[in-house]
Length: 75
Image 1 (cartoon, rainbow, N blue to C red):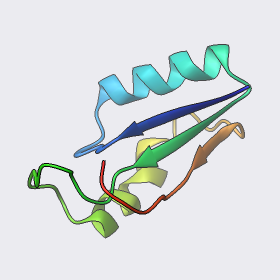
Image 2 (cartoon, helix red, strand yellow; image 1 turned 180 degrees about the vertical axis):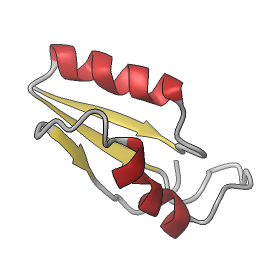
Image 3 (tube, one colour; image 1 turned 60 degrees about the vertical axis):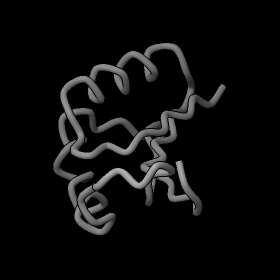
């Protein structure tokens, strides 16, 4: 079963890491879906910067069942 975890990840935090680890414990695969823009216009770091943080942010998890995905639209 796939778990989907969407968030602004602006910035990614230890709380996000905890949620990711918990999801990996109960799901076969977890997809992380960072939002590109905020529905209510909240100021966020530019998406390319947040995207570039992911390899550093998830290095301690190193789980082949963790996927990073991009979907268009507002969150």
